[in-house]
Length: 151
Image 1 (cartoon, helix red, strand yellow):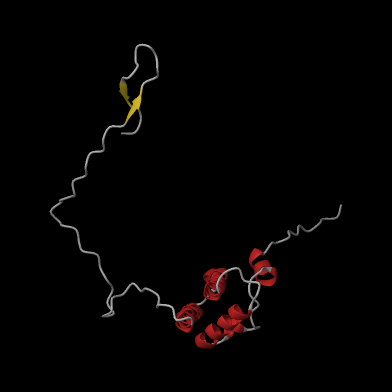
Image 2 (cartoon, one colour):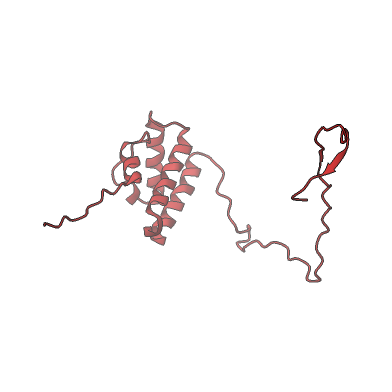
């Protein structure tokens, strides 16, 4: 009896999306370009494309994000930084506000105000008791009964 090797067809949805979807058509090798050129190329493709379903800025930003997410953990820190720089350049090209960062203008990380160490906790208002109407039987008409379960 001959052994048959088990081959499983691997579905690569992201490859199919890149090749056949109603996404915009990108220039070959576009993701290997420097950030500013990458942003210009993606912007040009988004504005020329008739297959996109949203505005050019949104479509271009989605393509950069899709590429970044598709690469996942295999994307080096250098390439991830290049893509983030390309997104910033794209925002600039489309005259959009810059990305909100987690640092303040002075360049230091912003902190939340610390809680008081005295153990004081804000007092919570007690939730009003939920009530429901009793079943309409001759004895209980118009009476209100406390709800069972959660307070």
